[in-house]
Amino acid sequence: MKPAPLDYIRATSVAHAVQVLAENDGDGKVLAGGQSLVPLLAMRLSQPTVLVDLGGLGELSYIRDESGHVEIGAMVRARTVEISSLIADAVPLLPVALRHVGHVTIRNRGTVGGSTAHADPAAELPAVLRALDADVVVTGPSGSRTIGAADFFQGFLTTALAPDEIVTALRVPKSAPGTRVAVQEFARRHGDFAIVAVFAAVELGASGEIAAARIAVAGADQVPVRAAAAEELLAGQDPSPAVLRAAAAEVAGATRPFDDIHGTADYRKKITAVLARRCLEQALPTAERSSA
Ligand code: FAD
Image 1 (cartoon, rainbow, N blue to C red):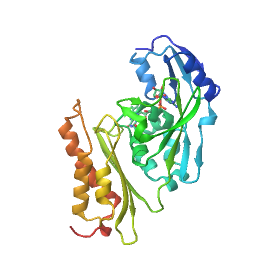
Image 2 (cartoon, protein in one colour; image 1 turned 180 degrees about the vertical axis):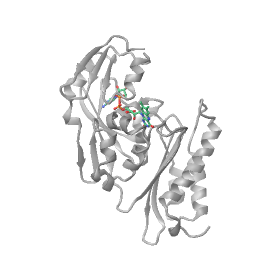
Image 3 (cartoon, protein in one colour; image 1 turned 135 degrees about the horizontal axis):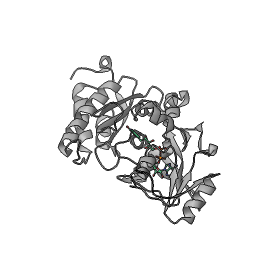
Image 4 (tube, rainbow, N blue to C red; image 1 turned 135 degrees about the vertical axis):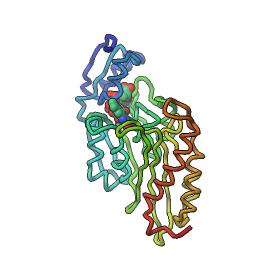
């Protein structure tokens, strides 16, 4: 199939893009990397009357080292984030997670703004934003506002973005030096969207105890899930196998999975517990764990 007829406008600035969206009263769509939108257009699951291409907006292609956080412009490609040494040092969970996004050709085109705005509950980036309490910066006709990831992701492919707003940047808090990170995914084939994926960033204290943990799950709810009870359980504990198993059960307990062609809700919950345990074990090498 091919897309329904539409007007194509190449935005010359963020203000121009927002103006076109506002003029088209909810019938406009932004084009970023096109990796999700173009198939939706081709299948006519999305039929905007006007497509606003952000591809020429250099003002949205930057990675900035700010005090306490890194700011990533919306048009930065997933692959650019994955191989950035600044990101590897400041937010090590991001590149480890983005390596699981599709194939490298998709990451070469797909943008961080596009993945965030698309809000697929199985996607890696939204889950990392949720785990790390990142902010999404959005711009509309009356200016910019900042939305925490917990409020931004509202449901399946649904966000807090108004029809005339675009995502302009992500602000991701820097991780403490020495933070250990891990990602565990289960997918049917390499490069597929995860059926379930678990993301962890763990800080260790001076005696090897868990000082703080941040855990999120993709693919086990309509939105990325933050496993707050598991994080509380882990804080201050020695990372023994028993503690990690108990935390993994809490991670699964935080999810509200669904049935689909890939598996039942019950199946997803069981996978979540297994992946969460493996993820914590991966983040915390065996040598540093005391016995159960
Ligand atoms: P586009 O496709 O251009 O846009 C997607 C949606 O977001 C559209 O509705 C568009 O209007 C909107 N949008 C885009 N940018 C903005 C913005 N700045 N402000 C407001 N709205 C905006 N993703 C994963 O996370 N994990 C995977 O494993 C994975 N596997 C994939 C496998 C295949 C074969 C393919 C084709 C894609 C896969 N993807 C996966 C999706 C990929 O990561 C997409 O790139 C991403 O979801 C969307 O980014 P994009 O820049 O291509 O956005």
